[in-house]
Image (cartoon, rainbow, N blue to C red; front, top):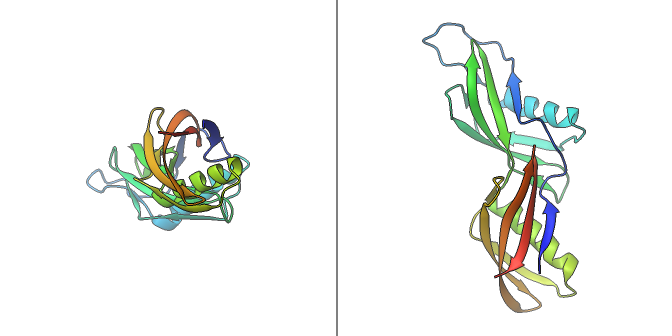
Length: 173
């Protein structure tokens, strides 16, 4: 079985800037507080036409090139994703960062269960994926699916990424 589905239902310009006021002392590393980052990500998603129910980031974003923070975004009771926030630069007290789409292991398991259920008359007993899925074309993850008591190994592979929209295929391996 081969399916293509969007992991998130939105497209967003990849780079956004937090204009958070911060120290201009070159010896002080600028930081975006966790609460401010959550608000900024939610505001950017809302401006793109997709209002999230919640955005929860794991920590403050330290303004060092390449530093990352994961944020859990719930778009509804059954749809969520986990964008990776990566620092791309700093300018005084402002931090520029990109968002890369991703799904945590739990989010990927829920997405695979929904897809298999849509294409099968069998009930889904369980889904266990090896890990999450990063929004880079060619990224993949294996999932063990038990439907109607029959186990099957499924492979998920990212086929396209546009903003925060990630399309992937699901096939039996």
